[in-house]
Every structure is written in structure tokens, then in C-alpha cells.
Length: 66
Image (cartoon, rainbow, N blue to C red; front, side, top):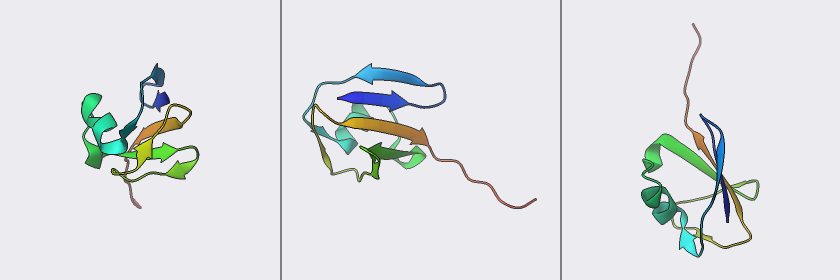
């Protein structure tokens, strides 16, 4: 599967199958610090990924009115 990481932007090819939670652990990414998008849809940690998926991992940012 193709994994797109943000900040800094880079792409990786990662073998499947595995679920989102395992992918994040393998990449040493804290699950609570990111959102995972699989083929343009928000993915949960237990969702199974396959070789033809495109997965984007974006950092969670928060802000507010100043």
C-alpha cells in the first residue's frame, strides 16, 4: 500500500495486510496524534488495510479564536 505522511510530506510503500493500529505502531506514530485517511475516507484503528489502498496520515492540529 502507499502511505502518504504529512509534515514533512513523504511517501512510503508498506506491505499489507495489516490494520491501521499496527501500521501506526510499525511507523512509531502515536495514534492519538494523527488522523488516518484510507482512500479518501476516515479510517479507524481496527480497519484492515490492503495492498491497493492509499493511506494518508495527517497530524492532528487544534486551534481556536484569538
